[in-house]
Image (cartoon, rainbow, N blue to C red):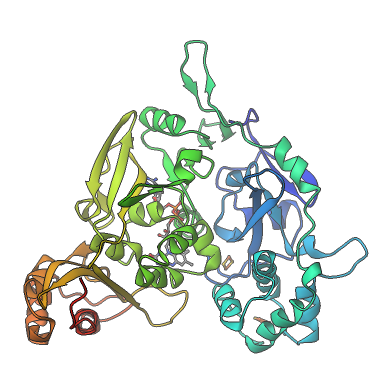
Length: 491
Ligand SMILES: Cc1cc2nc3c(=O)[nH]c(=O)nc-3n(C[C@H](O)[C@H](O)[C@H](O)COP(=O)(O)OP(=O)(O)OC[C@H]3O[C@@H](n4cnc5c(N)ncnc54)[C@H](O)[C@@H]3O)c2cc1C
Ligand code: FES
Ligand code: FES
């Protein structure tokens, strides 16, 4: 734990910034613009949608010799979560001799900017991309820009600019060597502070006069201990939901606990038949993890928000938030995933399909939290399919997302697990539809039988994103598509 209270320390362009007296809900964007006068970073939507606020946040790499970056939406990140990390803004790109980064040069040369409001965010998304990929194809560039809205220029010149910038390969990497020793200097301690009685003391990064705290523990035992003592604490993982609640609903939680520094929660552990995904593993990491085993799941995650959202958003946060249109849950339910829940030193395993008790309600008890998600690995003969339907392809919320797993034995569907979002107060399995499919040959399943099961399973409700008529039709057609493609035996 850091020994510093009420001071958030981070590295900015070769200097340690000590932010003192910040509120626990001050956003990174507000601090950059209002305190550091780095006004290149813009505020558009303040809800993670437009990308005008994109910056790069860095952490020491595993070897401690360099900095790993992710692009993030600074409007929904809370400043105390930056403690111990580094940040690059658009102002960081200008070199001492006044020259620009190749991406900026090429944006000028290719006429990639008109009004310019989106430009800093676009430049930062692209500079982040070329740190790890110096020859991206046009599709990769498009994906990297899917969280950056530009209303006036159009994307072609911006993509052209990225391709042109990559002709100067040796100049793409940011020079951050001066940041490395500073990151080591402000690195957070990896072991808890103990009182003379051997009790864990979680020292706050920020504590207000009223005694409200922002804490950022480094170990699982600190998290568990603090939550038992302060069960009303709001857990903060990727901040892509909490940031919105702070900005749009003016939420001011009593205590906030940031989980991003807890080593045990950042890991993926592998056994012979499952992955145990720690609670702060990001959607981007999960997308890579499942790419080969479950390509449809990876595709659903590729369409989850945008790169800056996925780089911080976590699978556990998606599950705990429990939105009716949460995208990961149908896939996880169809794959038989379960949750490892912890309260103090007691743990229990709960199947994800048994986790929700209503809209945004679940079985978590006071002081209990999700430690990990257990995702079974592929089994021989198991077919897995999933698809998200939304109005826009990228950066949009599901009308519905459906996922299924089954075996095809002697031409019949067996062990069917089918789950949806968007049709009920929480994502859920659909036992009545599963019963229609179980034991049937795919060609024998009728649209009429599925429609009947859908009507019997869900309450018909029109929503903001889609009418019930549309959602139920999509749900039925997705099931037909999932099984019609597999009329031959797989096992
Ligand atoms: C622009 C934008 C686009 C989005 N697009 C999508 C999308 O396409 N699909 C989709 O499903 N969602 C989407 N979301 C919603 C959001 O990104 C996801 O729900 C995300 O997975 C939340 O994870 P997080 O780590 O950011 O959660 P946080 O905001 O940190 O926390 C969310 C909730 O989970 C709780 N929590 C976090 N970790 C734990 C834990 N370990 N145990 C118990 N409780 C915990 C928090 O207290 C909080 O109540 C989008 C959000 C934004 C802003
Ligand atoms: S201001 Fe729009 S994403 Fe942050
Ligand atoms: S240049 Fe105006 S919004 Fe992109």
